[in-house]
Image (cartoon, rainbow, N blue to C red; front, side, top):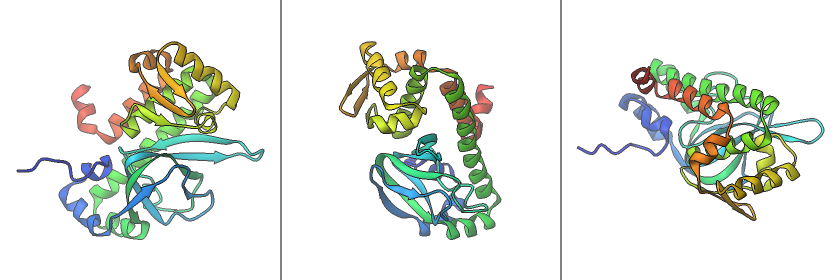
Length: 241
């Protein structure tokens, strides 16, 4: 019997067979090109996105023009979970940070399926809460931790979500990730490179020492990882408890 996962996306692969069949006919493939805008703040989200590869960045735009990342969604989850359960008006912008591919589904179809299944609704709530937990932790992190530890955390998280040690990120994108100025990002990236944790050249980053980045990162990386395990993989969390 074939035990291969039905999808490289964690949300889809975690669904029961019955729940997956509710949405399978409505799934469509989509390319995620770098800097592609999926929705702007105050727009109505039309589709949910379930990345196979690539990373989606949730971004807040401030009045003076600054852009600050508040969360990332990758192959482990779904963008549009809470929108499928209620108000679909976007509270923030969503932009492709790392290019890749995804499955998409019309939000109306996902909403209809969720109305037919308690377990599907529960899965959507759990994934929505996981993103909310990440947003909360990011707020505390940006207010309290050093630029170096924040960049280490974000690079580790991007690696986890994209499944690759090689990432293409502009200085502007990294500045948004950690809520800092571009010149600060350049200095800190060079510090991490001098420590042989990363190789960084013209926006191309290769993570060369994961353990070193983990030691440099703040507590928030481990906290978000633990919260995701508890919410998205409750059986693993129960076994580890």
